[in-house]
Length: 247
Image (cartoon, rainbow, N blue to C red):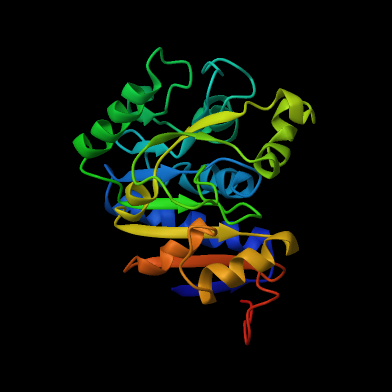
Protein backbone atom coordinates (compact mmCIF):
# COMPACT_ATOMS: atom_id res chain seq x y z
CA UNK A 1 0.00 0.00 0.00
CA UNK A 2 1.09 3.54 -0.68
CA UNK A 3 1.89 5.41 2.54
CA UNK A 4 1.93 9.20 2.95
CA UNK A 5 3.25 10.72 6.18
CA UNK A 6 2.40 14.27 7.24
CA UNK A 7 3.91 16.47 9.89
CA UNK A 8 0.65 16.76 11.80
CA UNK A 9 -3.08 16.10 11.63
CA UNK A 10 -3.79 19.54 10.17
CA UNK A 11 -1.46 19.04 7.21
CA UNK A 12 -3.00 15.63 6.54
CA UNK A 13 -6.55 17.01 6.69
CA UNK A 14 -5.71 19.85 4.29
CA UNK A 15 -4.19 17.54 1.70
CA UNK A 16 -6.94 14.93 1.82
CA UNK A 17 -9.62 17.65 1.69
CA UNK A 18 -7.88 19.10 -1.36
CA UNK A 19 -7.94 15.70 -3.07
CA UNK A 20 -11.61 15.11 -2.27
CA UNK A 21 -12.51 18.62 -3.43
CA UNK A 22 -10.71 18.01 -6.72
CA UNK A 23 -12.47 14.66 -7.08
CA UNK A 24 -15.89 16.29 -6.59
CA UNK A 25 -15.06 18.95 -9.16
CA UNK A 26 -13.98 16.31 -11.68
CA UNK A 27 -16.89 13.94 -10.93
CA UNK A 28 -19.82 15.92 -9.48
CA UNK A 29 -21.86 12.73 -8.89
CA UNK A 30 -19.04 10.89 -7.09
CA UNK A 31 -20.03 8.27 -4.51
CA UNK A 32 -18.15 8.68 -1.22
CA UNK A 33 -17.90 6.25 1.69
CA UNK A 34 -17.44 8.20 4.92
CA UNK A 35 -16.34 7.38 8.49
CA UNK A 36 -17.09 8.89 11.88
CA UNK A 37 -14.99 9.23 15.03
CA UNK A 38 -12.43 11.72 16.26
CA UNK A 39 -9.96 11.25 13.41
CA UNK A 40 -12.05 12.71 10.54
CA UNK A 41 -13.29 15.81 12.40
CA UNK A 42 -10.44 18.00 11.14
CA UNK A 43 -10.88 16.54 7.67
CA UNK A 44 -14.58 17.43 7.61
CA UNK A 45 -13.90 20.95 8.87
CA UNK A 46 -11.31 21.42 6.16
CA UNK A 47 -13.48 19.79 3.50
CA UNK A 48 -16.38 22.15 4.21
CA UNK A 49 -14.00 25.11 4.00
CA UNK A 50 -12.28 24.02 0.79
CA UNK A 51 -15.41 23.05 -1.13
CA UNK A 52 -17.22 26.30 -0.30
CA UNK A 53 -17.57 28.15 -3.59
CA UNK A 54 -15.30 25.66 -5.38
CA UNK A 55 -17.19 22.38 -5.55
CA UNK A 56 -20.88 21.60 -5.17
CA UNK A 57 -22.14 18.65 -3.13
CA UNK A 58 -25.56 18.77 -4.84
CA UNK A 59 -25.00 15.56 -6.81
CA UNK A 60 -22.53 13.84 -4.48
CA UNK A 61 -23.84 10.64 -2.92
CA UNK A 62 -22.52 9.38 0.40
CA UNK A 63 -22.70 6.15 2.38
CA UNK A 64 -21.65 6.10 6.00
CA UNK A 65 -19.76 3.08 7.24
CA UNK A 66 -21.78 2.22 10.31
CA UNK A 67 -24.36 3.11 12.95
CA UNK A 68 -25.25 2.01 16.47
CA UNK A 69 -28.12 -0.42 17.01
CA UNK A 70 -31.01 1.03 19.00
CA UNK A 71 -30.04 4.68 18.43
CA UNK A 72 -32.50 6.67 16.26
CA UNK A 73 -31.20 9.07 13.63
CA UNK A 74 -32.38 12.03 15.74
CA UNK A 75 -30.39 10.93 18.81
CA UNK A 76 -27.53 13.37 19.54
CA UNK A 77 -25.09 10.45 19.86
CA UNK A 78 -26.01 8.85 16.53
CA UNK A 79 -23.49 8.83 13.73
CA UNK A 80 -26.04 10.57 11.54
CA UNK A 81 -26.07 13.54 13.91
CA UNK A 82 -22.27 13.43 14.01
CA UNK A 83 -22.16 13.81 10.24
CA UNK A 84 -24.76 16.59 10.28
CA UNK A 85 -22.79 18.51 12.89
CA UNK A 86 -19.35 18.13 11.37
CA UNK A 87 -20.02 18.12 7.63
CA UNK A 88 -23.45 17.99 6.05
CA UNK A 89 -24.95 21.14 7.54
CA UNK A 90 -21.94 23.07 6.22
CA UNK A 91 -22.18 21.98 2.57
CA UNK A 92 -24.90 22.03 -0.10
CA UNK A 93 -25.52 18.28 -0.01
CA UNK A 94 -28.95 16.97 -1.05
CA UNK A 95 -30.52 15.08 1.89
CA UNK A 96 -31.83 12.36 -0.42
CA UNK A 97 -28.26 11.58 -1.48
CA UNK A 98 -26.99 11.00 2.08
CA UNK A 99 -27.25 7.33 3.02
CA UNK A 100 -27.15 5.92 6.54
CA UNK A 101 -27.88 2.61 8.18
CA UNK A 102 -30.96 2.60 10.41
CA UNK A 103 -30.06 1.08 13.76
CA UNK A 104 -33.72 1.11 14.81
CA UNK A 105 -35.07 -0.82 11.81
CA UNK A 106 -37.52 -3.57 12.90
CA UNK A 107 -35.60 -6.15 10.87
CA UNK A 108 -31.87 -5.41 11.11
CA UNK A 109 -30.83 -8.17 8.72
CA UNK A 110 -33.22 -6.75 6.11
CA UNK A 111 -31.79 -3.30 6.77
CA UNK A 112 -28.31 -4.61 6.03
CA UNK A 113 -29.53 -6.09 2.75
CA UNK A 114 -31.25 -2.81 1.88
CA UNK A 115 -28.00 -0.91 2.39
CA UNK A 116 -26.04 -3.27 0.18
CA UNK A 117 -28.68 -2.88 -2.53
CA UNK A 118 -28.51 0.91 -2.24
CA UNK A 119 -24.73 0.85 -2.69
CA UNK A 120 -25.11 -1.37 -5.75
CA UNK A 121 -27.83 0.90 -7.17
CA UNK A 122 -25.47 3.88 -6.80
CA UNK A 123 -22.88 2.08 -8.91
CA UNK A 124 -20.60 1.24 -5.99
CA UNK A 125 -18.37 3.49 -3.91
CA UNK A 126 -15.79 5.51 -5.82
CA UNK A 127 -13.73 6.70 -2.85
CA UNK A 128 -13.90 5.13 0.60
CA UNK A 129 -12.38 7.07 3.50
CA UNK A 130 -11.57 4.98 6.57
CA UNK A 131 -10.40 5.50 10.10
CA UNK A 132 -8.84 2.74 12.17
CA UNK A 133 -9.42 1.66 15.75
CA UNK A 134 -6.59 0.94 18.16
CA UNK A 135 -7.44 -2.76 17.79
CA UNK A 136 -7.23 -2.55 13.99
CA UNK A 137 -10.95 -2.45 13.26
CA UNK A 138 -12.30 -0.50 10.30
CA UNK A 139 -15.95 0.41 10.27
CA UNK A 140 -17.22 -1.83 13.03
CA UNK A 141 -15.45 -4.89 11.63
CA UNK A 142 -13.98 -6.12 14.90
CA UNK A 143 -11.05 -8.53 15.33
CA UNK A 144 -12.15 -12.15 15.55
CA UNK A 145 -11.81 -15.62 14.06
CA UNK A 146 -13.70 -14.55 10.95
CA UNK A 147 -14.92 -11.39 9.22
CA UNK A 148 -18.31 -10.70 7.68
CA UNK A 149 -18.18 -9.98 3.96
CA UNK A 150 -21.20 -7.72 3.66
CA UNK A 151 -23.11 -5.19 5.75
CA UNK A 152 -23.99 -6.90 8.99
CA UNK A 153 -24.92 -6.71 12.66
CA UNK A 154 -21.96 -6.82 15.03
CA UNK A 155 -21.30 -7.01 18.77
CA UNK A 156 -18.82 -4.29 19.77
CA UNK A 157 -15.74 -5.05 21.81
CA UNK A 158 -15.26 -3.28 25.13
CA UNK A 159 -12.29 -1.40 23.64
CA UNK A 160 -14.45 -0.05 20.83
CA UNK A 161 -17.18 0.97 23.26
CA UNK A 162 -14.60 2.81 25.38
CA UNK A 163 -13.39 4.63 22.26
CA UNK A 164 -16.95 5.80 21.57
CA UNK A 165 -17.80 6.79 25.13
CA UNK A 166 -17.15 10.46 24.32
CA UNK A 167 -20.33 10.48 22.25
CA UNK A 168 -22.26 9.37 25.33
CA UNK A 169 -21.01 11.80 27.93
CA UNK A 170 -17.97 9.68 28.71
CA UNK A 171 -20.11 6.85 30.08
CA UNK A 172 -19.14 3.59 28.40
CA UNK A 173 -22.22 1.90 29.85
CA UNK A 174 -24.37 4.14 27.65
CA UNK A 175 -22.61 3.04 24.46
CA UNK A 176 -24.72 0.44 22.62
CA UNK A 177 -23.33 -3.07 22.62
CA UNK A 178 -24.25 -3.64 18.97
CA UNK A 179 -23.91 -1.80 15.69
CA UNK A 180 -24.49 -2.20 11.96
CA UNK A 181 -21.46 -1.95 9.70
CA UNK A 182 -20.37 -2.34 6.11
CA UNK A 183 -18.51 -5.63 5.76
CA UNK A 184 -14.96 -6.13 4.59
CA UNK A 185 -15.94 -7.14 1.05
CA UNK A 186 -18.20 -4.09 0.81
CA UNK A 187 -15.28 -1.87 1.81
CA UNK A 188 -12.78 -3.62 -0.45
CA UNK A 189 -15.09 -3.23 -3.46
CA UNK A 190 -14.63 0.56 -3.35
CA UNK A 191 -12.63 1.73 -6.34
CA UNK A 192 -10.20 3.70 -4.18
CA UNK A 193 -9.54 3.57 -0.43
CA UNK A 194 -7.78 6.04 1.85
CA UNK A 195 -7.11 5.00 5.44
CA UNK A 196 -6.44 7.90 7.83
CA UNK A 197 -4.67 7.44 11.18
CA UNK A 198 -3.36 10.06 13.59
CA UNK A 199 -1.72 10.00 17.00
CA UNK A 200 0.75 7.71 18.72
CA UNK A 201 -1.97 5.33 19.95
CA UNK A 202 -2.47 4.22 16.34
CA UNK A 203 1.23 3.60 15.59
CA UNK A 204 1.21 -0.12 16.37
CA UNK A 205 -1.90 -1.00 14.35
CA UNK A 206 -0.69 1.18 11.45
CA UNK A 207 2.61 -0.71 11.35
CA UNK A 208 0.81 -4.06 11.44
CA UNK A 209 -1.72 -2.95 8.82
CA UNK A 210 1.03 -2.07 6.35
CA UNK A 211 3.75 -4.61 7.14
CA UNK A 212 2.07 -7.41 9.07
CA UNK A 213 0.36 -10.56 7.82
CA UNK A 214 -3.23 -10.67 6.67
CA UNK A 215 -5.24 -11.71 9.69
CA UNK A 216 -8.83 -11.48 10.82
CA UNK A 217 -7.45 -10.39 14.18
CA UNK A 218 -6.44 -7.11 12.49
CA UNK A 219 -9.21 -6.38 9.97
CA UNK A 220 -7.38 -3.38 8.48
CA UNK A 221 -4.63 -5.72 7.25
CA UNK A 222 -6.97 -6.85 4.46
CA UNK A 223 -6.48 -3.46 2.81
CA UNK A 224 -3.21 -4.94 1.54
CA UNK A 225 -5.36 -6.82 -0.98
CA UNK A 226 -6.77 -3.66 -2.55
CA UNK A 227 -5.18 -2.45 -5.81
CA UNK A 228 -5.61 1.26 -5.00
CA UNK A 229 -5.34 1.79 -1.24
CA UNK A 230 -3.35 4.50 0.52
CA UNK A 231 -2.54 5.03 4.18
CA UNK A 232 -2.31 8.69 5.22
CA UNK A 233 -0.81 9.19 8.68
CA UNK A 234 0.66 11.94 10.80
CA UNK A 235 4.19 11.73 12.19
CA UNK A 236 3.06 10.20 15.49
CA UNK A 237 1.03 7.44 13.86
CA UNK A 238 4.01 6.68 11.60
CA UNK A 239 6.39 6.25 14.55
CA UNK A 240 6.88 2.51 13.96
CA UNK A 241 7.31 2.72 10.19
CA UNK A 242 10.95 2.42 9.18
CA UNK A 243 12.26 5.25 7.07
CA UNK A 244 9.01 7.24 7.20
CA UNK A 245 9.51 10.94 6.50
CA UNK A 246 6.80 13.57 6.81
CA UNK A 247 5.91 16.27 4.35
